[in-house]
Image (cartoon, rainbow over all chains, first blue to last red; front, side):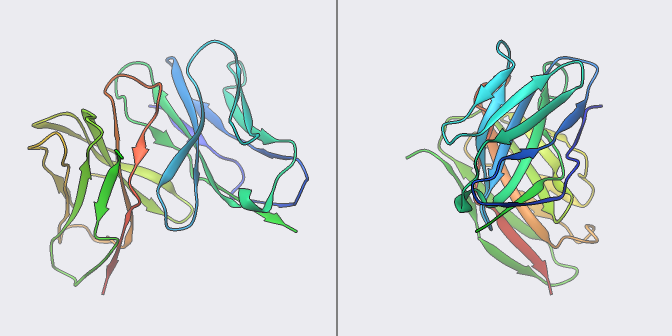
Length: 114
Length: 114
Protein backbone atom coordinates (compact mmCIF):
# COMPACT_ATOMS: atom_id res chain seq x y z
CA UNK A 1 0.00 0.00 0.00
CA UNK A 2 1.14 3.52 -0.66
CA UNK A 3 1.72 6.14 2.01
CA UNK A 4 2.59 9.81 2.12
CA UNK A 5 4.65 11.51 4.82
CA UNK A 6 4.74 15.24 5.38
CA UNK A 7 7.53 15.74 7.85
CA UNK A 8 6.53 19.16 9.16
CA UNK A 9 3.12 19.80 10.71
CA UNK A 10 3.75 23.57 10.91
CA UNK A 11 6.17 25.87 9.13
CA UNK A 12 6.39 29.48 10.33
CA UNK A 13 8.16 31.85 7.96
CA UNK A 14 8.51 35.59 7.49
CA UNK A 15 7.03 37.34 4.48
CA UNK A 16 9.33 37.40 1.41
CA UNK A 17 11.45 34.54 2.78
CA UNK A 18 11.84 31.25 0.89
CA UNK A 19 10.04 28.13 2.06
CA UNK A 20 10.16 24.38 1.46
CA UNK A 21 7.41 21.97 2.49
CA UNK A 22 8.62 18.39 2.47
CA UNK A 23 6.78 15.34 1.15
CA UNK A 24 7.96 11.75 0.87
CA UNK A 25 5.98 8.82 -0.43
CA UNK A 26 6.29 5.06 -0.52
CA UNK A 27 4.98 2.93 -3.35
CA UNK A 28 6.14 -0.09 -5.31
CA UNK A 29 4.45 1.05 -8.53
CA UNK A 30 4.40 4.20 -10.62
CA UNK A 31 2.61 7.12 -9.02
CA UNK A 32 1.14 10.49 -9.82
CA UNK A 33 1.87 13.24 -7.30
CA UNK A 34 -0.13 16.29 -6.30
CA UNK A 35 -0.01 19.28 -3.99
CA UNK A 36 -3.29 20.76 -2.75
CA UNK A 37 -3.92 23.92 -0.73
CA UNK A 38 -6.72 24.42 1.79
CA UNK A 39 -7.88 27.72 3.24
CA UNK A 40 -9.87 27.68 6.53
CA UNK A 41 -13.24 25.89 6.37
CA UNK A 42 -12.96 25.29 2.66
CA UNK A 43 -12.32 22.37 0.35
CA UNK A 44 -8.99 21.65 -1.27
CA UNK A 45 -7.70 23.30 -4.43
CA UNK A 46 -5.16 21.73 -6.76
CA UNK A 47 -1.87 23.62 -6.64
CA UNK A 48 0.29 21.53 -8.96
CA UNK A 49 0.83 17.98 -10.15
CA UNK A 50 3.44 15.61 -11.52
CA UNK A 51 2.20 13.02 -14.01
CA UNK A 52 5.23 12.35 -16.21
CA UNK A 53 7.95 14.15 -18.15
CA UNK A 54 9.84 17.06 -16.62
CA UNK A 55 10.47 16.45 -12.93
CA UNK A 56 10.11 20.16 -12.08
CA UNK A 57 6.53 21.41 -12.13
CA UNK A 58 5.33 24.94 -11.46
CA UNK A 59 2.11 26.67 -10.44
CA UNK A 60 0.83 30.01 -11.65
CA UNK A 61 1.37 31.66 -8.25
CA UNK A 62 5.08 30.97 -7.89
CA UNK A 63 5.17 27.56 -6.22
CA UNK A 64 7.20 24.72 -7.69
CA UNK A 65 7.82 21.09 -6.81
CA UNK A 66 10.41 18.59 -7.95
CA UNK A 67 9.82 14.88 -8.33
CA UNK A 68 12.83 12.89 -7.15
CA UNK A 69 12.31 9.22 -7.87
CA UNK A 70 15.47 7.98 -6.14
CA UNK A 71 14.55 9.78 -2.93
CA UNK A 72 10.79 9.22 -3.39
CA UNK A 73 10.18 12.88 -2.66
CA UNK A 74 8.03 15.68 -4.03
CA UNK A 75 8.97 18.77 -2.02
CA UNK A 76 7.13 22.05 -2.54
CA UNK A 77 9.09 25.32 -2.70
CA UNK A 78 8.51 29.01 -3.13
CA UNK A 79 11.37 31.54 -3.32
CA UNK A 80 9.41 34.38 -1.69
CA UNK A 81 6.17 33.90 0.27
CA UNK A 82 3.31 36.33 0.81
CA UNK A 83 0.89 36.70 3.69
CA UNK A 84 -1.81 35.31 1.39
CA UNK A 85 0.09 32.00 1.15
CA UNK A 86 -0.91 31.23 4.74
CA UNK A 87 -2.89 27.98 4.45
CA UNK A 88 -2.61 24.24 4.92
CA UNK A 89 -0.84 22.28 2.20
CA UNK A 90 -1.42 18.61 1.45
CA UNK A 91 0.72 16.27 -0.60
CA UNK A 92 -1.12 13.38 -2.28
CA UNK A 93 -0.27 10.32 -4.33
CA UNK A 94 -2.31 8.29 -6.75
CA UNK A 95 -1.24 4.91 -8.06
CA UNK A 96 -0.97 4.17 -11.76
CA UNK A 97 -2.68 0.81 -11.18
CA UNK A 98 -4.97 -0.75 -8.60
CA UNK A 99 -6.81 1.63 -6.32
CA UNK A 100 -7.03 4.91 -8.15
CA UNK A 101 -8.06 7.05 -5.18
CA UNK A 102 -5.75 9.72 -3.79
CA UNK A 103 -3.85 9.05 -0.56
CA UNK A 104 -3.06 12.24 1.35
CA UNK A 105 -0.35 13.22 3.77
CA UNK A 106 -1.21 14.70 7.16
CA UNK A 107 -0.74 18.27 5.95
CA UNK A 108 1.62 21.17 6.68
CA UNK A 109 0.32 24.45 8.01
CA UNK A 110 2.26 27.34 6.46
CA UNK A 111 2.14 30.46 8.63
CA UNK A 112 3.52 33.56 6.95
CA UNK A 113 4.31 36.35 9.37
CA UNK A 114 4.81 40.05 8.50
CA UNK B 1 -20.49 26.98 -13.52
CA UNK B 2 -19.72 23.34 -12.89
CA UNK B 3 -18.78 22.19 -9.43
CA UNK B 4 -19.55 20.11 -6.38
CA UNK B 5 -22.13 21.12 -3.79
CA UNK B 6 -22.05 19.71 -0.28
CA UNK B 7 -24.88 20.30 2.12
CA UNK B 8 -25.42 21.22 4.81
CA UNK B 9 -22.31 23.23 5.67
CA UNK B 10 -22.78 22.55 9.41
CA UNK B 11 -24.60 19.57 10.91
CA UNK B 12 -25.27 18.61 14.49
CA UNK B 13 -26.12 15.06 15.46
CA UNK B 14 -27.30 13.57 18.68
CA UNK B 15 -25.64 10.38 19.80
CA UNK B 16 -27.40 7.31 18.40
CA UNK B 17 -28.76 9.09 15.33
CA UNK B 18 -27.98 8.44 11.71
CA UNK B 19 -27.32 11.49 9.53
CA UNK B 20 -26.88 11.83 5.78
CA UNK B 21 -24.49 14.24 4.11
CA UNK B 22 -25.33 15.34 0.60
CA UNK B 23 -22.87 15.61 -2.30
CA UNK B 24 -23.99 16.65 -5.79
CA UNK B 25 -21.83 17.39 -8.84
CA UNK B 26 -22.60 18.74 -12.31
CA UNK B 27 -19.16 18.12 -13.79
CA UNK B 28 -20.21 14.91 -15.54
CA UNK B 29 -17.53 13.07 -13.56
CA UNK B 30 -17.90 9.32 -13.21
CA UNK B 31 -15.82 8.94 -10.05
CA UNK B 32 -16.74 10.34 -6.63
CA UNK B 33 -15.08 10.12 -3.21
CA UNK B 34 -15.70 10.81 0.47
CA UNK B 35 -12.90 11.83 2.80
CA UNK B 36 -12.84 12.58 6.50
CA UNK B 37 -10.52 15.29 7.81
CA UNK B 38 -9.33 15.47 11.41
CA UNK B 39 -6.73 17.90 12.75
CA UNK B 40 -3.20 16.57 12.27
CA UNK B 41 -4.36 13.48 10.35
CA UNK B 42 -4.90 14.81 6.88
CA UNK B 43 -7.65 13.33 4.75
CA UNK B 44 -8.64 9.71 5.09
CA UNK B 45 -10.66 7.88 2.46
CA UNK B 46 -14.07 6.58 3.58
CA UNK B 47 -15.70 5.33 0.37
CA UNK B 48 -15.28 5.86 -3.35
CA UNK B 49 -17.26 5.10 -6.47
CA UNK B 50 -15.86 4.80 -9.97
CA UNK B 51 -19.22 4.32 -11.66
CA UNK B 52 -22.95 4.42 -10.96
CA UNK B 53 -24.29 1.54 -8.82
CA UNK B 54 -20.80 0.55 -7.71
CA UNK B 55 -18.66 1.68 -4.77
CA UNK B 56 -15.72 0.45 -2.71
CA UNK B 57 -14.64 0.81 0.89
CA UNK B 58 -11.75 3.08 1.65
CA UNK B 59 -9.48 3.00 4.67
CA UNK B 60 -12.03 3.95 7.35
CA UNK B 61 -15.42 2.70 6.08
CA UNK B 62 -16.66 1.26 9.39
CA UNK B 63 -19.71 3.13 10.64
CA UNK B 64 -20.45 4.74 7.28
CA UNK B 65 -22.59 3.81 4.28
CA UNK B 66 -23.04 5.24 0.79
CA UNK B 67 -25.17 4.83 -2.32
CA UNK B 68 -24.57 5.75 -5.94
CA UNK B 69 -27.90 5.59 -7.75
CA UNK B 70 -27.22 8.60 -9.96
CA UNK B 71 -24.05 9.84 -11.58
CA UNK B 72 -24.51 13.28 -10.02
CA UNK B 73 -25.07 12.20 -6.44
CA UNK B 74 -23.04 10.33 -3.80
CA UNK B 75 -24.65 10.72 -0.34
CA UNK B 76 -22.82 9.59 2.78
CA UNK B 77 -24.69 8.27 5.83
CA UNK B 78 -22.93 8.44 9.18
CA UNK B 79 -24.52 5.71 11.25
CA UNK B 80 -24.77 5.30 15.01
CA UNK B 81 -22.06 2.65 14.72
CA UNK B 82 -19.49 5.38 14.00
CA UNK B 83 -18.10 6.01 17.48
CA UNK B 84 -16.35 9.30 16.83
CA UNK B 85 -18.12 11.06 13.96
CA UNK B 86 -17.20 14.65 14.80
CA UNK B 87 -15.05 15.77 11.85
CA UNK B 88 -14.93 17.74 8.62
CA UNK B 89 -16.21 15.70 5.67
CA UNK B 90 -15.11 16.40 2.12
CA UNK B 91 -16.59 15.08 -1.09
CA UNK B 92 -14.65 15.06 -4.37
CA UNK B 93 -15.08 13.94 -7.95
CA UNK B 94 -12.84 13.18 -10.92
CA UNK B 95 -12.92 11.64 -14.37
CA UNK B 96 -12.16 7.94 -13.84
CA UNK B 97 -8.72 6.57 -14.62
CA UNK B 98 -7.53 10.00 -15.69
CA UNK B 99 -5.22 11.57 -13.15
CA UNK B 100 -4.41 14.70 -15.11
CA UNK B 101 -6.77 17.07 -13.34
CA UNK B 102 -6.74 15.50 -9.92
CA UNK B 103 -9.91 15.98 -7.95
CA UNK B 104 -12.51 18.72 -7.66
CA UNK B 105 -13.53 19.16 -4.04
CA UNK B 106 -16.69 20.44 -2.42
CA UNK B 107 -16.52 22.99 0.37
CA UNK B 108 -17.17 20.42 3.08
CA UNK B 109 -19.64 19.59 5.84
CA UNK B 110 -18.63 20.01 9.47
CA UNK B 111 -20.39 17.39 11.59
CA UNK B 112 -20.56 17.77 15.36
CA UNK B 113 -22.03 15.27 17.81
CA UNK B 114 -23.90 16.94 20.65
